[in-house]
Amino acid sequence: MADSASGVPETTTGVTMATTVLPPLITLVPPKTRAVSTSCSSSESDTQQTVPCKTLPVDVTTHTFKKPEKAISLPEHIPAWEKSEGYHDLMGFILTLNEAVKDKKVTDDVLVSDLTKEILALLDELERWIVDIPPIDQPQRFGNKAFRDWYARLTERSQDVLRKALPEKFHPAVAEMAVYLEESFGNSTRIDYGTGHELAFVAFLCCLCKIAAFGEEDYPALGLKIFNRYIQVARKLQETYRMEPAGSHGVWSLDDYQFLPFLWGSAQLLNNKRILPKSFVKPDIYVTFAKDYLFLAAVNFINTVKTGPFAEHSNQLWNVSGVANWGKVNTGLIKMYKAEVLCKFPVVQHFLFGSLLTMNPVEQQT
Image 1: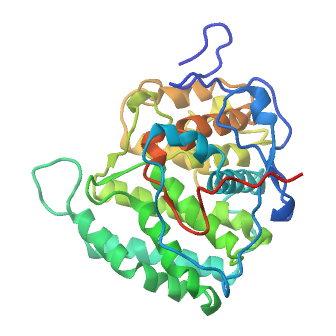
Image 2 (image 1 turned 120 degrees about the vertical axis):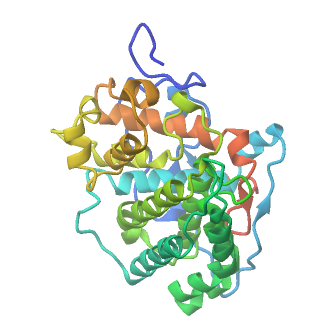
């Protein structure tokens, strides 16, 4: 929907896309000094507020890991979640990668470490399993039950594929991180996928940074290479097994399945002189540049699986095309992500907390 006075997109919760360009929310500095904007509020003053967050890497040789479990069971738990280390670590990580991918293409030559190559190979293997486990013939149009076999293989082999990918010194963390990997690809009971599963993969990457498997120099590749490959695998799962959108608002959602390709994708386009927000709805733009930009790849995918006028089947995205520049789009999507994903009880009630991402109150630093 659009505000009748300003023409600025508004979300279903009344979060209006920003009308002023704010300063960068986070800079790539050592984690112990990093400050991030974390408020779930949609006001501009809250967006500018920064809260120090303790994110020192853990020592895997002495740290006690544990299997993640649910900790948010009531809507009344959301305020504690907002003030938790886990929330601050995740939001800080999302904003850090937002900075890391600014003005960069997916196809740009960024540092690709050995571990990055291993995680990409892990995702390649998960995609091969889709070929091994084809959809079955069934009367239901959506939710092909073969996905449950694919998911069963994932839960059975997740720790093995992680041990294969990670250097041995990080193996003590495998059991904890494997849970986030398993949660990243959908729910096997409902055979659905949504932003909560996308958040689980972000948690997986965040944990790899918290154990210092990845460093600051890897941030661009995390967003441009690994996350992009993850999205490709997730989309293949969605198409192959006809997965239902989890908790979608239908035409009023930004996308049936994903959010971060739009947030980080808008950062990629921040200073692009050719591709403006009003341009991304044009086929010659989103088809030609899908390989370079997460945002345009997402738009291209939508147009391959949906029919009819774009303004009708993707109204919220259509509204985004009316925003003046990518800086405003990016700031607005950060606000929207907090309101529509991180602070939505139906989404975060399923999030799991271990020793790396906790519900412990964040330590305020002075």
